[in-house]
Image 1 (cartoon, helix red, strand yellow):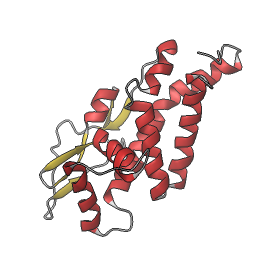
Image 2 (cartoon, rainbow, N blue to C red; image 1 turned 45 degrees about the horizontal axis):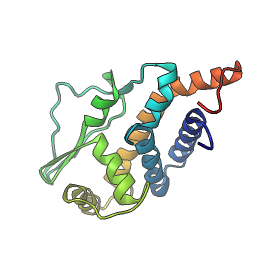
Image 3 (spheres, rainbow, N blue to C red; image 1 turned 90 degrees about the vertical axis):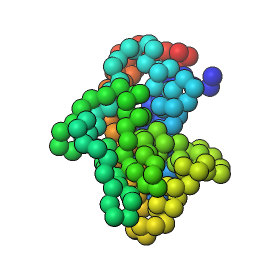
Image 4 (spheres, rainbow, N blue to C red; image 1 turned 180 degrees about the vertical axis):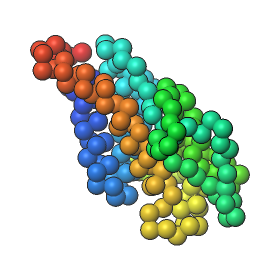
Length: 185
C-alpha cells in the first residue's frame, strides 16, 4: 500500500470536510463517494483504521423513534438526519438504516442516498439507476427547487458522518504527534 490506512482515513476526512464547506452539487456528490468509502465498502475504511484504536464510532442523529415518516399532498416527505431537537447516538448499522425520505411508495434510507450519489449521480462512478434510485431522480425534477431534495439530504448525511469521524481523526492526529504513528499500518 502506498500510504497507510490511517493516512488515507485522515485525507478522506479532510477531503470530506472541504467538500461540505463548498456545498455545491458536484462537491456533495463527491462527498457521498467519500462517505461510501468510509462506511460502505466491503470492509469500510473506518473499520480498517479503528481496528487499532478500538474507539466507539457513533452517529448523532435526530431521534425519530416515535415519529412516523409522513408525506405531503404530492406523495413525498422527508426529514433531516441532523440532530436538531431531540437526538440519539446510534451505531453505523442503525445510522445507515434510518429512513429520511418517502416518495413513490418507497422509503429511502441514509444508505440508499449515499449509494445513489456514489453510484448513480457520479460520486464514485456514474451508472444506470435501479428502479428505486430512479424515483430519487424524478423526485428532484418534480419539486423544481433550486437545491433539490437529494442534495439537501446529502448535505445532512455528510455533516453527521464528519462529526462521527472526528473522535477517531483526533485520536490518530494525537498518536502522530506523540510519535506512535506507523506509516505502514
